[in-house]
Length: 430
Image (cartoon, helix red, strand yellow):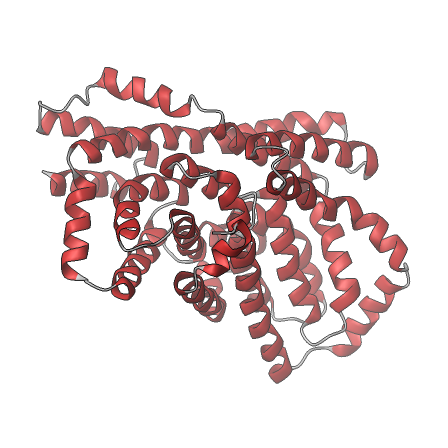
């Protein structure tokens, strides 16, 4: 019967049914196939309400709101100017500055597509005007946007923490070094690419000269409050002063204060549209969380975690082989499913397996999130690809083709993160 359940789920997705509705239909169909299961409509609705009745999940709409306020306030431009000031005249400096901006902006938005939109809107036209290959730059930003869900605060980490029961704060801290490592792998590729292929130095030097003419103090003053945002969020969580949800509240207040009164980049009249956009983004995520919780309970009642776990450990006996097959599974899932439902469906199945071979659940949370982040730039789902397409009009195929070297850099970092646990765990002392 378990196979039939997954077939029903696959068919509804293939027919284009929204993921939340697909999860709900599949969960309710289990009771029809096996009347002994208590998954009636009343049970499903009760479970959906209970799933959302948690303090931790408040962090999701709050971080989305904070990120939207910062995006509307043009924070990404100030971050990019700051990093360009220091490395813009180096080999590949301006594209590398864009990657670093994605890294920092991820610490503001917690979202991959939001990072691509905010950083790409500003950097892609600028870099193309300086003579850089537009397809190269667009694909780079699309892949670097995946850092938005690895660098804390990360919405997938909040969802994983809720699903697995581990500390969201610890997950946030555990994501810092893996995010930096992925960015470093991408930066190395960009450096050697432009070392080999060259750049239009005359245009670049002219642009950097204009930036440097403002003086360091002016650039620092413009970017200081944007740079301080992740410090406040992570510092509060790491020091134990605030929980991730409380940090999300602080980030909203901070974003409002900086955008309204310091940068004055938005006005009170803009807040209604920002709130409306945030609600439109948050509600589908929370609906998926509620229906996925019902689907997860159905899988548990049908003993899916035990059956699938036995199948994997029966076919693969070493820790190396089990981790490799789980990585391959997660990479495939990331290609066909959004991050939130993938985490909610797979955590109850995969977490017991990796714990049985001695993998720390926080380490596995990072592994899972990095795998699914690659799904942001792999067809057919590839949300970052579609955002980049909407920004530039370039075809999904062209962006995907140029993204391959960056995805390889991502995969190199993934293997290091998978098999060197200290990269994820050293900052939390595990």
